[in-house]
Image 1: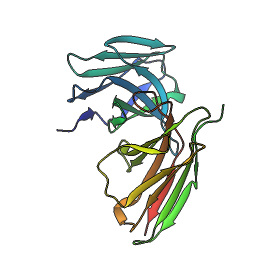
Image 2 (image 1 turned 120 degrees about the vertical axis):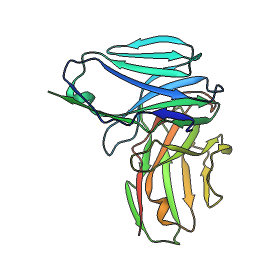
Image 3 (image 1 turned 180 degrees about the horizontal axis):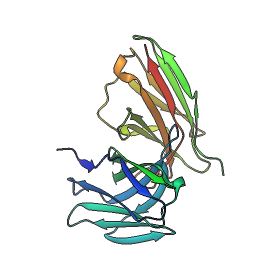
Image 4 (image 1 turned 90 degrees about the horizontal axis):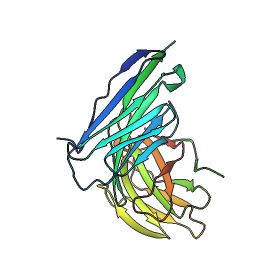
Length: 109
Length: 113
């Protein structure tokens, strides 16, 4: 079993749809949870950074953390074609950050 | 604010050779972490440097080594290159190591022939 599990997709949605991306993890030592967006031929771009269980909202993005279930989610509202990218979940315990494999998202106009 | 920059953007080497990749951290950041990203996979942690000292290492052999300079820029050195070393090498900078958010450069794509 991988330490961080993420469905690789691909996921294809129409413009304006609500997108739900998810990761599960096995190591309860992880304390900080992040979502990164990676466009083709680019480095990962930090979208959300959270610590506690609960929700954090930033514009069209909402990150959700459930530490008791070891489950994190990212919701994208009113998705746009510019949101088409690979989304990586990441979990941090001190200096050791572990990533999921990434979910490839395509938003069709 | 200057972001993380990496050089070169692309590199082609042959098996057995050695390579040095470079990273300039975001202004104000004193910690640099290096990652290897194989095609279709998430990045894997190689090691982190904080104030010029190695501050944690992932599951990579000793032929992967690094340096951090007084201006917080960093180098990743890989000796005795193998075909499996072909990947995107990413550098990320952060403040004061530990659990701070990390910001990535666009990486160096290394191909081994």
